[in-house]
Image (tube, rainbow, N blue to C red):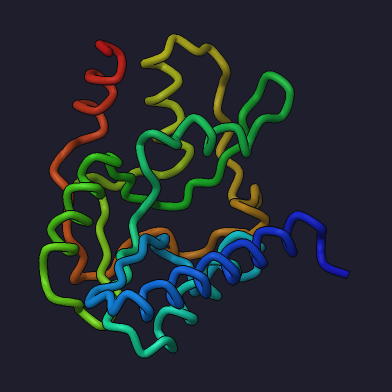
Length: 191
């Protein structure tokens, strides 16, 4: 029996996507643009990513002109990502490579895509720098004067999936965003 929240999440993405596609068809929308996550096809053991895959598949099968933008993790969500490894006063995090990105850079690329013709495919965006999850956690915690130590543990799961290889990294053709993590940190501290 699937986990209750898993069913709710999958139903949410399925129902909302079907409703949006129906409205798009009725309004003769010429470009259906959706935001998804880099690595989705490789992370479907996770309820969240399985739900995102359902969303992508519905869009692809709809016959509507579309573009799906898969983004890497937002800098703005790093603190939540760190919390997956909370084990008392220690943080256990995997060394899996990622290229996080500023949400503002993703929003700007979405605007650019929305103004253009539908790609009829998936495009990707990632940040300009690569970090291990454990490594970016140490940088973020230090910047926030958080003394909790980070222990590198490859077995720690990410949304209930053990990370292997480069599943969180965008492909070769991805757009590379401009804002570095240190610039984003500096701006978020100043705000």
